[in-house]
Length: 213
Image 1: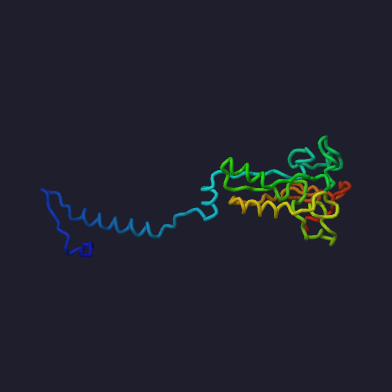
Image 2 (image 1 turned 180 degrees about the vertical axis):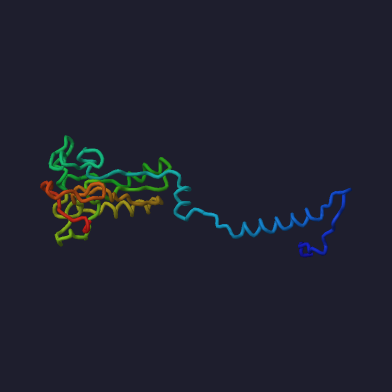
């Protein structure tokens, strides 16, 4: 048997003055409509990435950038701190050499994450100052080198921190990603997604247009 009932096979009954025939037909029609509706309605489902983050449960955020050494808070750089040496810093915030993790040990980060139970980690590739944790090859709009980063002649640390972080997380079996602040870049005179008035540029900042940014 197919399990499907034809209308010719439906039996109708009378109970006193109540006729159930119309009710039975209405019920079958209602079921048919509901089934058709269920098939046609698209139910949103999470993406593979969303499911991954949900399953990982604990994600570690490593806030490691110029503010680590300048102690200027978040977004770290502003006109009152840019060319000033913070109490725990070796140089001004405007100097890329101020970022100097002489004993950088990313493997230790991974050990701490695993002990915590974190299965994913995010590193601040660039925060509000505009300092980059990788030696970018992208030049400034006028063609000059973007030097406010690691791995350049003016930098204290010559390694690519992002690459070391990525490789270490892979070896430890920890998923990883990067945080890149688009809102602020004090090095490029950008605040709140807007290039500020170039009349107020201070030494160490670069002048770019809104279109170039």
